[in-house]
Image 1 (cartoon, rainbow, N blue to C red):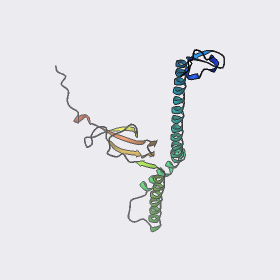
Image 2 (image 1 turned 120 degrees about the vertical axis):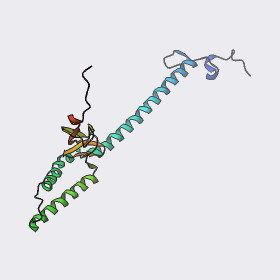
Image 3 (image 1 turned 60 degrees about the horizontal axis):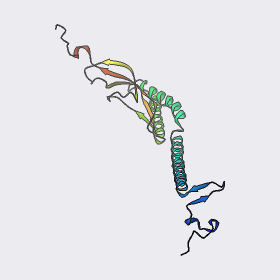
Image 4 (image 1 turned 180 degrees about the vertical axis):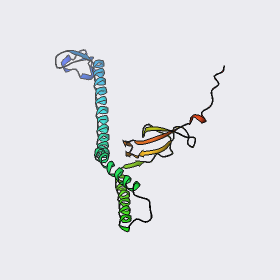
Length: 192
């Protein structure tokens, strides 16, 4: 093996040198180059992770946009279902109606059912909360009803049905909520 002391520095292999000269002519050690390489690798990994997070976020936003694009349109259509329901609830309940009126009522009923089926196929579902516990995320309490027949905070009357689009609320159900009657309230001893 040859002695490196007799070889000029310009001819010495890079692996045998303790230092190297960069473009600006500054001397850097192998350790500082490795430190710089570590920093650059860390930056590269962070940039790669950031790009992946951006891709995932964009994919989720695109899916949400497709899933909830009909939100405003669906909200507008809810008044149609409300009007069909009102028409069915307000016709006279007598058996002596003319056949033409019975046919009209049957047609309105079939139209409402088909309309609700179409909405459901597109992710719009009706909330029917009667006799369920009040949930402020899906129900809006309009009044309280004193009753002993139902537990407190249970829905005893539905004024207007609510709707959800997939898992997002379109319109809360307008409801009446049970509260205990004063007669069923426990007596408080105030003589102490």
